[in-house]
Amino acid sequence: PQSPKDMFINTIVLILFMVYDKKKAISDLKNEEPTRVRFPKENEFVGIVDKRLGGSRMDIRTTDGRTIIARVPGRVKKFLWIREGDIVLLEKWEFDQEKADLIYKYKPNEIKALEKKGLLGNFENVEEF
Image 1 (cartoon, rainbow, N blue to C red):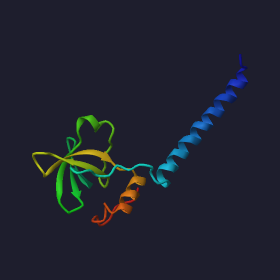
Image 2: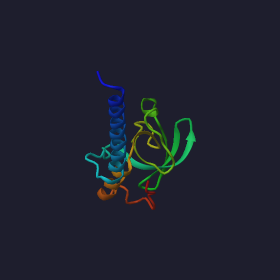
Image 3: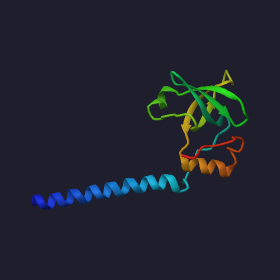
Image 4: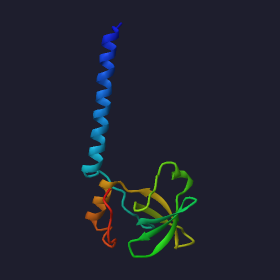
């Protein structure tokens, strides 16, 4: 059995480690190169969110200059918080090429990798996060 003083000290040490790990994780997200980036496959493409339309729909500007309507499917709606200016990965609908499903939101360190690969070359200004 530990004394109350020892339990208090152990709790403080544990909290300090948790805060340190969280700060380290945030700095890693901002500074480090990602180990793996999801690049577009054959039916996928990269776009930037221009305008939220409501009802899980939004206007997306693609790398070739077109504007399309995309939606966030229910299976990923709870996991993706989308804002205007976000870089996203989209999958075209099979029957309507002017619409797409949003399947992934790129993090700031992944955007740097996309720029190095040349997949964001046609956007005039990509805001840094």
